[in-house]
Image 1 (cartoon, rainbow, N blue to C red):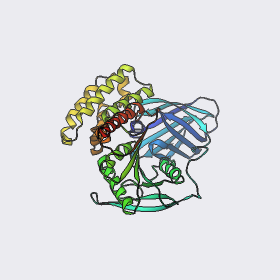
Image 2: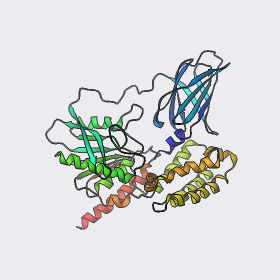
Image 3: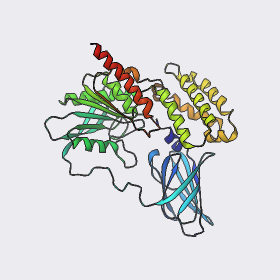
Image 4: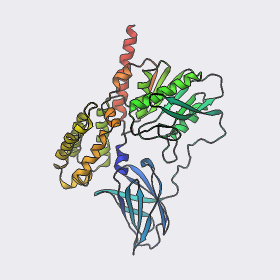
Length: 415
């Protein structure tokens, strides 16, 4: 659910910045900027070393391969996951103003001096703690993998336990992004207030076995059920599931298949059909970028809807290449050159971006509607969404939960 991160990371080539100012001093120090709503940092340490960081995109302290000094500029060259990244800056004091260039696409960028990458008040909890921690592993026989996590336990005799389920993208037990560990923060908060929390490394992350990228949300649901079974076998009762984003989709799925699940919490999870949710997400991201006209955005949404309708679960993957290629060609070639350059540098690159949607995970995901699952829930449910979230819009998804749960209540009332 992170198209913005895909925009920044998947095809990023270089950043080109021009500095306004006449100073001849090296622009040393830490610089902070924003590209298409995603924060980046450039740490220029000396004439031969600089470091690039895009926290939300997974670039964590990528050191430059070389720095080239010219008459009035420095060129920083980086490599990351097969990508080539250049940062070109003039020599000057306070502000770097220029363009973010993704292939042939340009986005305005402004870099300003900053003192620190980290917030002034870090959320990461520090000892001593008023609860205990225990390493627990559990086995998924269907996938033949063992996963491992941490259970934080209050020191009282009895307490409920919640299993945290992370969102899309490979996540460790802390759901860690650039030294921010939201699941650790949640676990600390709840366990210090009398609630046990189990958080685990997803398959293929941390100490857990398995292959993440060949799995679907349904496979991740099976992992959750195995975690529930493990906690139940250890004697824990009143077990709940709290899922973030995609995890908010997985939690209800698992709860409908286990009588051992006593409550469900959805954190920024989908409550409406995924294809509809993704169309809203695409529209909001494009509007937020401010690069496209209202008419162009509407045309793009129509095209994207056609792509989603094409990508079913049953059709063999090989039979989808040609119709998908035709859809991409019909859309891309009818844009003017300026708009085309905003989407991709070539027709082939545009098609290749959409070809990534033919993975098992995306095909399952885009065809899923959580409504029938939510209607089958028979335990207490709490759904929380943020008003400023443009990935999972709060309005339609909370309304989806309200509608589905109201039908559950009406059904129970009849009995």
